[in-house]
Length: 187
Figure 1: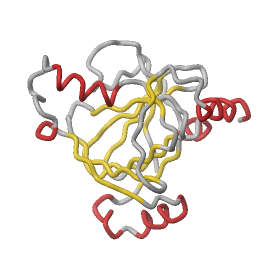
Figure 2 (figure 1 turned 60 degrees about the vertical axis):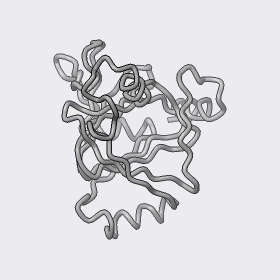
Figure 3 (figure 1 turned 90 degrees about the vertical axis):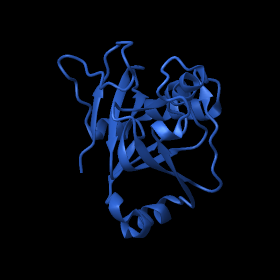
Figure 4 (figure 1 turned 180 degrees about the vertical axis):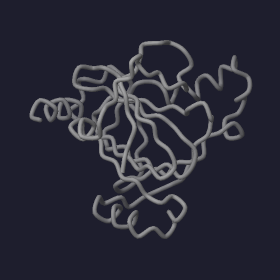
C-alpha cells in the first residue's frame, strides 16, 4: 500500500506536469497522516460490490456517493486552450481552497493530482491512480488537477448530504481552518 507524494517546485509551467523538485524530495505517507490525510488502496474494478469499500464507508459514515468523469468530452471547449470557459473550469479545480467538511475521493480510472499545504505552507503533490482512495481533512488548503493524460473517473463520497462548497484562500478566519491549524500544532 503505497502512495506517491513529493514537494513541488515553484514552476508556473502546465499544472498537469509532475512539478518535482530536483533532486526529488518524497513525502512519506506517515507525514501525510500527520497532516490529516489518509489513504487506502482498493480494487477499483469491483467498486460496485467491493466489501472493503463498503466496510470503509460504514466505518467512516460515508452515506452518499456519486461518480464524475473528467475528460475532454465532458469539458466543453477543451481543445481550445484559449477558451475562457475552459480556463474557468480548469481553474475551478486548481484554485487553492478549503472545505468545511472532509474531502473524500476514490479514483476509479485515470490519474490526477491533489496538492496540499504542509505545516510550513509548502506544496506537496500527491499522485492518485486507479484504486486510490484519499481523505483530506476539513480546513486543509488544497487544489486538484488532472495529470497529462487529461482523464480521471472519480467517486466522491460524503457524510450525509453532499456539500460541495469551496472557500478560496484566504479563508483563515473560518472556525474549521482554525481547528485544523490547532490540530497541526498539537501533533
